[in-house]
Image (cartoon, rainbow, N blue to C red; front, side):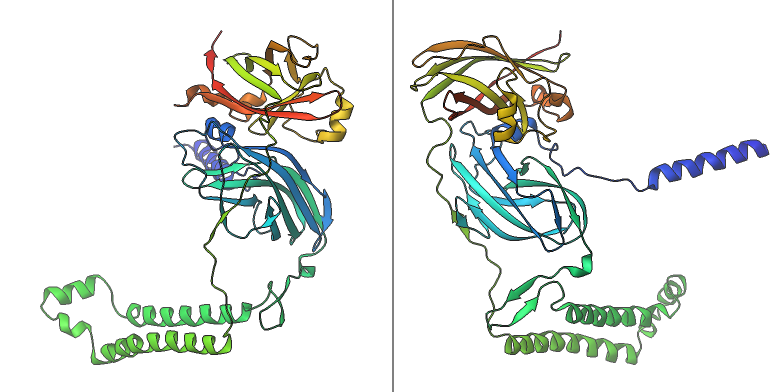
Amino acid sequence: MTKTMKNFLGIFCLGLFGLTFAPTAVYAHGDKSLEPFIRMRTIQWYDVRWSEDKLRVNDEVVITGKFHVAEDWPRAVPKPDLTYLGVSSPGPVFIRTERYVNGQATTGSAALKLGGDYDFKLVLKARLPGRYHLHPFFNLHDAGPVMGPGHWIEVTGVPAAFTNPVKTLNGDIIDMETYGLANGIGWHAFWFALAAAWLLWWVRRPLFIPRFKILQSGQGDALVTRLDRIIAAAILAGVPLVVFGAQAMTDSQYPNTVPLQTALDQIEPLAPLVNTGQVQVKVQRAEYSVPARSMTIVMQIHNASDQPVRIQEFASANVRFINLALDLANQNASQGIDDDTLVAPKGLNIDSADPIKAGESRTLRLTATDALWATQRLDGLIRDTDSRLGGLLFLIDATGNRHITSISTAVIPKFD
């Protein structure tokens, strides 16, 4: 091999090493990892809001919103009898200080009811400075996390300023950020030193080949000396004594303790917010055009209310298609869509712009076209074993009242 070839090969290997191990920023939270039919037809989020965009260390941000538990729950997903509401963040950059579902304070898992509507409130305290993307999410047992809408929050300040004071059952005020830190480090150091000493005691001797030869010669008893047995017996007796002695000291020092909670909250849904019956929607057909990245939905809408209504929005798996024929400025003020990256810029096209009069039934064709179907991996529903579309349809009347309907239907793929 020539010198030039060797240099080229060396540069190539260095470049490959750099590409493999170069640090990169990762912002994803797995919100696209679940199959589309799970994200569309389980927890349907809406009206999610963040109280702050910028805050300092120790300041609080409040996340509020609502979600609907879809009636057309996928058969492949266990029923929501065991769920957990949390916040997805890139590490322990916030701490959660409060959590409410339907106004009820909750610390553990909860059972939800199909077709139910719930509101939630999460209070987070900023811990580390930086810029973070946060999502509320529901962990579904045996299925995974169904993410809500995400939002960027910037935290300023210094990490050392963070405090987390808590009042104990004894009335003492402690800082959870540093409480017990020295004790934990001490115990880890003790067990590490004991394990390292025991390992070095044996490693200091000839290993493998010499020991194998001694075994082959029938002198295996010489490998373990009397001192080895004494030290092993001391460790065997000493370790349980240390563990049980430390536990007894801890019990006497902290007589009032609360174990980790494993209760399952039974939270009743709110009064119906979705599918109230005033506006009834029946989906007749849905087609997804793969080349155009466009979903066409044909539906029959019956307006049983006393006001004319118009379609305002269709949302599925946090992607929102807005009816651009309505007053977008008013929608921005009420719905907060200015900085929402999951709002389709082309909006929602409807074949009839006229309001649906009170008592009228009308068949409409909705077309939602955008690359978000692909970038959010929702177009994968045509490859799912359960190829059904799910989402929320928002209608609004002349007085500003919203009518929300959860819809679901099979999807027919089109490849031309």
